[in-house]
Length: 485
Ligand code: GLU
Image (cartoon, rainbow, N blue to C red; front, top):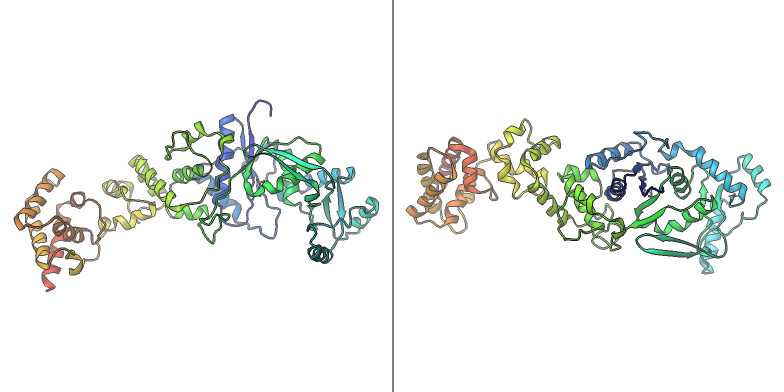
């Protein structure tokens, strides 16, 4: 496109759960389209029928929409280049391959799998380059056509020049040159009549008018093959950007054996879409001011595709957790409540309104939204009573805990306004009157009120529970203590 607007695409294969790598590449593509006033397309690469999973496509749509990475054209939206599913475009690939057959740039190959395996063994034994040995390269095209007409199984291969080099520019890495002798006569159409990824991908990128191919680094090795197909079809090249692969801690390509990779998993765990996008953006790019917490708008303003790093970003869940916590605390409380509700993280029967008083108490330590129920169970329900052991802190005794709880029960009963300004002096008074150290009061009280060790700030807990519930729980705990010698 001459006006500088980018027409870009992602092309996920529907082979399983929506992959985090799809969102990563979608983020860069969509941002480029939005920055340049172009279009972001979603194509479904479903020509590999052996790995195809029918439910996968919808899951990909849902996950990307959940993240806010919506597209302008795609199988579900339609558009000027429909259909956007490769399995529905086989006649288009066939037309293009016929052009290549007629011009001699492609040829039919009738070699069986066994013949190819034998050839490979010989190549291995003689330490030769592994690849198609060229057996059918010089078959008479008319004869080949007749054999094909009789439905003899065959594939169609690209005739890669024996000599010379294939060159292209990767906008992130610079010029890349490969000797043609290193490039195999790749299969364009398989025996089942479906195109290979290489063929379908190039034909679609041409048909869709794709100007910038932004995809993961793992495809860099395929790009010389693609360039040869573009050339054979007499087409100019799009701009290529190969973004760094997401990696496991051991630097291997990210895999589900070593990392969660399904976007559904991240959603179920209660990661915010804002945090995921922020995290993915940081995998390939960093802002000039090194302010690592940002939103999509800011990313869109500042991102420069030419500045994508070539490093090997390690997918670090600890970092994602940190970002998630930061985004949770950045969010407007009302919006956060709404999100907890929408994503199904409020306890059953609890409304946003019910959850509003407790929210500020737990956000400080919350890492994932899924923790909300656990962190607030003492508030929404009656927690199991603490044991006497739990009520006695390490640096306390049965007697210090008894004094602490009895003091609290007595003095809090006299407080009429349950606000910090009135509760705080009461706690100080209990400490003074009984010569207690802070943990000797706070720990038993914490256990008494919440039945847990890591509750929010104690004064806030007392306030949010209100007088009746707080006193009930303290008295229950005191009883347990007194009844346990
Ligand atoms: N179907 C490929 C994938 O699953 C598309 C690669 C490309 O963008 O060219 O990632």
